[in-house]
Image 1 (cartoon, one colour):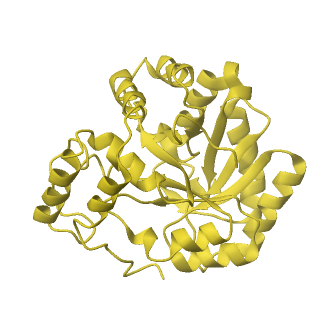
Image 2: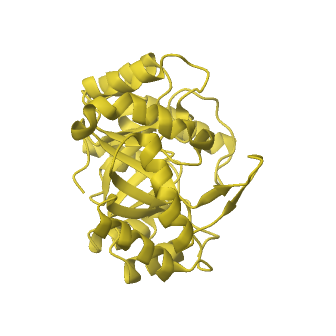
Image 3: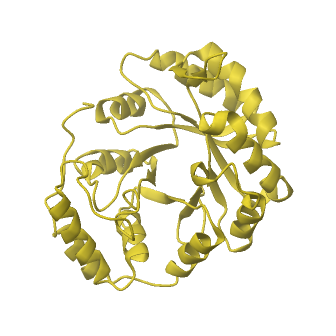
Length: 286
């Protein structure tokens, strides 16, 4: 996939506040400032998220890449959802996403999860049909499970995998990043700022790291003089990674993200950050 500039940043639309009246202005300002990749999902806010993204970006459709996700089906009362990766559901629900997004094609359609118990070949068949129909240009999965990712590599022609990856979650380094790079499949990162703890949120236990260990990483990142730049550039330095999704909620946050991209963190400093803590590893999802 040809993913976006500046510096491979994607706009994480899940962070948008449904109560805010500034979302359209925020999304359009992101386009004006050079962000062209936007990630949403039909699950977010029961479709509202897709709707606001579609409304904001429709005038710029040829300039942007829109990614959305499928697989979680709300019940009739809207109180809960169930996992549904079936061919029938995917082929049916894509039209609702297209309508909400005000477009006739989706740049990247992602399975919003996945397990080995899924009808994987059936799900892949649905995506391939949608590609033939021109309703989607690329497809992939959003998963942190190495065993699931490996099966999809073997069976599909997927373009990308979205996975959680940061200085405080280096599990993808264990095998997934190299495996995907070898297969020429792009990685899109989420959780790049570790719930904000790498920039401004208080430290707490996180994915096997103690609060004290998180504080050690916070201190090390702060020494770079730009924690946001360092956090983003750390994940982007792996050749498999093509885009880091950053949740943006306000104009101030957007400006900070854009400003951070004018700062280059020396490679030796990024290497030093990788040596602060022992990398965590997958204990489940194999």
